[in-house]
Amino acid sequence: MKKEMMRRTEHIWYPYTQMGDNFSPKLVEEAKGVNLKINGQWVIDGISSWWSVLHGYNHHSLNDALKIQIDKFSHVMIGGLIHEPAIELAKSLSSICGGLLNRVFFSDSGSVGIEVAIKLSIQYWMNKKKPNKTKMICFKKSYHGDTTGAMSISDPEDSMHHIFSPILMKHHFFEAPSSDPDIKQGQLKTLDVFLSKRHEEIAAIIIEPLVQCAGGFNFFEADYLDDLRYLSDKYNVLLIYDEVATGFCRTGSFFAYHQSKTEPDILVCGKGLTGGYLGLAATITSDKVFRAFYEKSKPEKAFMHGPTFMGNPLACSLAIKSIELATKNNYSDKFLKIQKILEEELAGFTHSLIKGIRIKGGIGVIEVHNKSDIEGFGDYSFNRGAWLRGFESFIYTMPPAIIEEHDVRKITRIMKDYFLGKK
Image 1: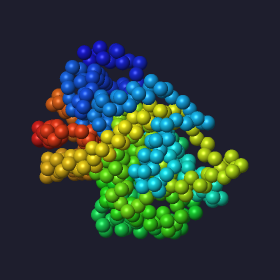
Image 2: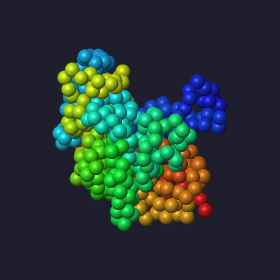
Image 3: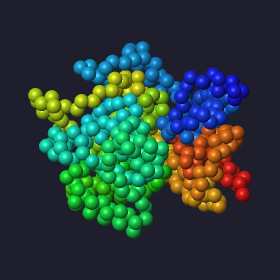
Image 4: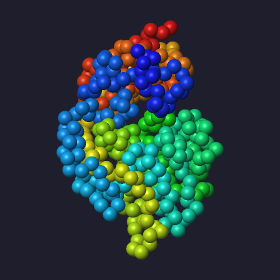
């Protein structure tokens, strides 16, 4: 079976995978609700297909939205043309953001949405006749995507992208945000001093609100965002929130930044935007940012970026329905209920291999001291009925919002039993 699967997929180059290893993927045959049928076995998807599936698989409302739009047209360029799904989705996103972030630029993935944010923030200052403001303030343990600009603002050393450091644009990195009040104050003081001396070269500060995901699953409190907003205003730099992974209720509010008192100048969202059906991202800006590009007979001030499939009407139709479902069914509360179950099951769990456990909304993370200790976790969990994976020194769950309590507890039992079976 394994050799046969390797033969059948020999033309596929898999992501984040050493193809020279003895690697054999598992074939998905069907998907429904929170379950995947893999090699004839139904298992719970505990990681939502890289954190994008909100409503489960094969959801009838999303299926219907897709069918209705595809019978009209599947795609038109947004260049001299526009369509109702893009218009309605942009209005919906602006409304969710409270109207202050009210200009939406669509793209087709989170990484590209981040590239758009970087380019917007740098050109913003060029258009404001401050061409030296080209550097970004970033944080260790950050991950913003795999494209070149996104890699340059992700952790440059302790990351999967460190080998590309020689070719990347150089930015300024600071320690990952801490929830310890004393450490946090020291971090912010360091940043304040730096900005007081170097703000004339800084275009923006970029951060993943509350949870730094793929860069190290670092969690921090919402008041850190309040302090960054203060420093951004004090030193006249833009503030960018990367909510590609944290958006759409996963942390217990529609966007993670809603738990703070702040608004960013630029917000990037993706992943769960279409409920996990199709690639779509949005870079949403304040009117202040937009106005720097808006001037009659000044084509050099226009933003010269345009993904071919930006604002794809199929994806936009899905996103409209996905937001409607998340809002109508109060997914923020659903993820907070998942958080409570995760806390009951994991918060007090200890083992000599475990370094720490972190929980926020629908995200549960176990960090180990040595990543070699979780090398067999993926196969172990699959054989126990759940699709979970180890990543670096972490095992984690980020299930869809519709998951039932007994399935959450099954996932956590698998996670705990894995350690209990080790000395």
